[in-house]
Length: 113
Length: 113
Image (tube, rainbow over all chains, first blue to last red; front, side):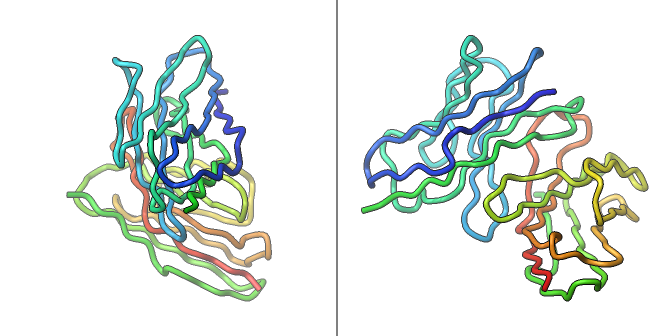
């Protein structure tokens, strides 16, 4: 079964510093990968997705992620974070014949002044 | 454009009481529909998904059930709530047959006392 692992449960970072949120997946077949963001007491919003094509994917709010097949990773990056980026970030892989998303346990990003 | 609604936004219920959470989608037809639960400090757990009216797949054994009486309506129910049913419940939809993203509703915060 396909799965994703987010090793960091919390990542503190100062404003305007770069950040990387790690995501590793396990799959023996083609993968479709997603990053979602969740602000407090809200639903999830798609940041970016990798379905095929270029391995460097750019998303909203200045985030980007790189699909690395050899390392089975899909890490999320932002060169300069803002206070408003404080939220929980979920990596997910599409499974179940394209019908289901399997989520990681999430990474809480806390941006401090 | 498509929108997804969930209600109520918050709910406090005593142990042993029934539950009914509703989710509706507008602006699309024949969507896949999903119910997730997010417990405190944990990731998202897929509870049910549906690819059509009356078609419900249960992902985990539990005290909850789901129904899809209409194409764009998805209901999560329980006859008798347990303390462990507390959490943040998210409804989502995706386009039928599309290997692509899911769109999430604003969520319902359920507290069972």
